[in-house]
Image 1: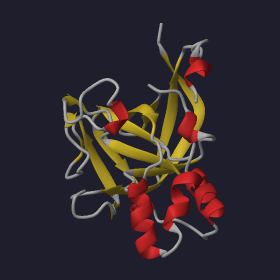
Image 2: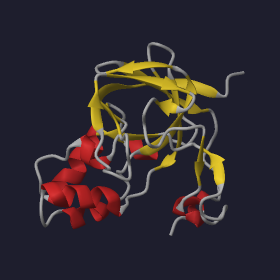
Image 3: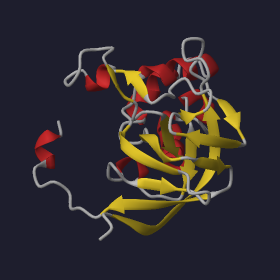
Length: 198
């Protein structure tokens, strides 16, 4: 019996990009299509099958420990980006400023889809959602360069709306305008989950 169920929810790809040199600049360059490999998007600074551990997993691994890379892509929702911009009092935020790999539209409350859900494209290319991507200051600095005085508003406005991190389960091409189907695990939420929220 399948453990992952296709849903009726689909998302249209409205933006694709990659960050080629994270040390030089966080801003992503836009792409018309992306060839996904088991290491992520070719030329992407977050790519690779492994990565050094970071602050998000410091409770599990000492910083810079080599671990599997489940943060190959940053996937955001166009609807949630619009809500962030509205809360910040600006017309819009450019996906490139947020270091996005993929921006989609059409899935409600996208940041909170269950971990291990899949997004699958027409080519068969499949992304596994790792977890919610927590707000951080890196995009705030980029926003500040483009909109002086407003960067500090990004982190609080993006709480619960920052999208997800994902990794490639099946290789293939994803292009602008394509539809991705959401597949979710056939599993109820853990009964003790609320005790972990602070």
